[in-house]
Length: 455
Ligand SMILES: NC(=O)c1ccc[n+]([C@@H]2O[C@H](COP(=O)([O-])OP(=O)(O)OC[C@H]3O[C@@H](n4cnc5c(N)ncnc54)[C@H](O)[C@@H]3O)[C@@H](O)[C@H]2O)c1
Image (cartoon, rainbow, N blue to C red; front, side, top):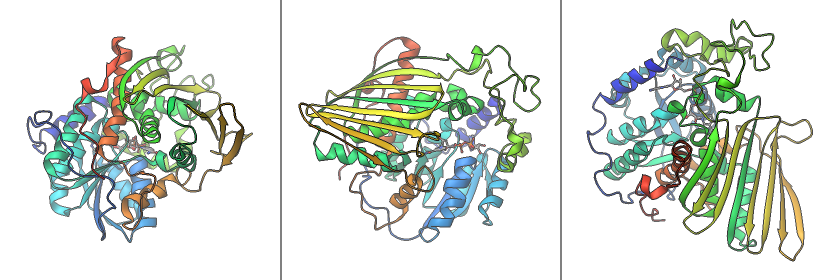
């Protein structure tokens, strides 16, 4: 990947003066706008920054197919002009295309209500802050931020601007996720004393992170931020609790320098015959259009080598979290598993909820969740929740409804703002810091979290 070119562009972008110099972390943070309010009525004008896979599909083409009555896309922006032009063609609308250096010009030309941020993770906060300062709302993909300072800058810019930040935590909207929330809200387990969340990423999905920018911590914040931000947010939301303290262990134990041979990318690799992880990107026309045909702009290889010595994103990690209300969380993520799935549990004073989800397994219905409640000195019941249809088991559509359908109520409290985005990112940032320093990390030592938003 041409990392230097990404970083140069970031300096140019920040140097455009879109951000207010020295604003971050000076003023005390305070609650400003709520997330529980329904989205504003009327058609919303949106611009999209980051026209890669997620941006051009979920927040581009698919959004226009299902929500064109609620939203209008009015501009596209990317560091890679070729990719943005391809995205315009793919979305099928005659939209103006801007280079990332012209972000401010795009906002002035197109006058959007909100900016959809779907760039590489480490740039989300730059665009969120810039959007707010230019008078727009910001709707950001997870993770909202990858660094502590970014969390502070977002909270401060939102407070100062009076505009609103929404974080698109689609995982909250999955059928199994909602079922877990309902069991916990029913109170049948009593006070939750501890919880477990184990994420298994297989050698297909898991390996894909190490082929891409995600394998470098400075872009993704590590999988503790990029991937686990979903899981930490779900836990915060399920438990209705805030993290207080984190400690973690982790390492690069399987990918990266652990291989016995390596190349720059799969195309042209002399080890194709020997490598279990050889992946032929030329088999996908979409990936050829989106990435290979755009390499001349930024030198980014989508089929990078999983054995790259520069990979520093951990592939094995375990995290302990103590919540402010005393609940203890035991979390792990392994990205080289023979199968894909999740194992989640809640240990309450009246009983335990076990949840097991398998993805893409020959012996299992895709994404089905198996749940069991066992009451202490009592009975047990089991049931299965099937995955919905559509992107991420229907979660993407439900998320879009919650963002853009003005009459949708929010009985499970699924809308997430800056506060939820920051709290989830901070667990991952604290875990990464703990691995790097060997110390326990207190969340409030990283960022002064504003009080909960008023309902
Ligand atoms: N919620 C989900 O289920 C889900 C799923 C996939 C991806 N995502 C999120 O979507 C985001 C994009 O992921 P992706 O898979 O589409 O990655 P991608 O690599 O396909 O796309 C990233 C895009 O950002 C652009 N970009 C990089 N730096 C930029 C900069 N400084 N300014 C403007 N554009 C820049 C790249 O050129 C690229 O087009 C990530 O934050 C990821 O976490 C979320």
